[in-house]
Image 1 (cartoon, rainbow, N blue to C red):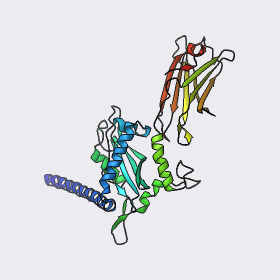
Image 2: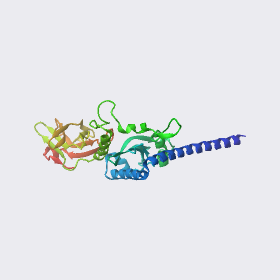
Image 3: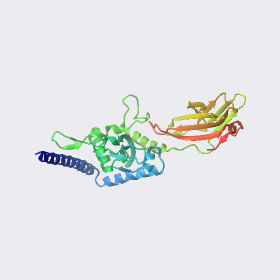
Image 4: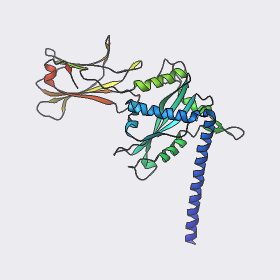
Length: 331
């Protein structure tokens, strides 16, 4: 009797899994069928263009696609087009293969048609802790699993049933792409954008302008005033579109006595505007070169809104190089 109950339970479990799989397959087919009716022969072409765009951005070291340079990724096979065939929503799936990684990622990936040309940009992303989906947290989630997560979290609201019970495109599904500011002018961070098209072009442009360009050799100026005992640093700021990239400077001075703790640890960000461009300038007072051995400078440029791990330029130099008026210090 017990064996019969176990067998029946096992068969029911298999039946439930099969039904679930069939529903997911039906949903995939339904979304693709409706989307392909709108796009026609353009479906595969737009998919390839989006795929090629990410390859180009990653190879050109755009800051927002640094993960795609080193980790396996793919654009999900599902593309959701609006009725007018002017917008589409996709999913960019990324596996993190670094040794210490315990999560993967799925990103919104948008496409818009402006003046008969398609432009692409990335939206919000989902961090996916592996412990929520499998026992082994050190093995990346499969692309099949990432597709399933994308179907549930990104594509789910693309289709809705009308009054007749027929599946139709949900126009509200695309509203968030425009990101119209509820209070104040503009769209998202672009306060001067007066239309969706302007905002989409702004995002496409920002994508390229977010390429991280570290300070080049001889761009950092350092000088020391013996009378006032002040050290002054100057370096050009990076500009992106119509704004300066946010930046932070951290400096440390280490004692000659070999102490591990720094004498000074400044965190400042001062911007000045000059005819030659935007200049970052810092002044350190009461510096006695007899007490200091090395001077470490870290300049962090943040080129992506919300980025918590900006890439720094790091320069470590002997204090005597500054005191001796070697104004331009190479990297």
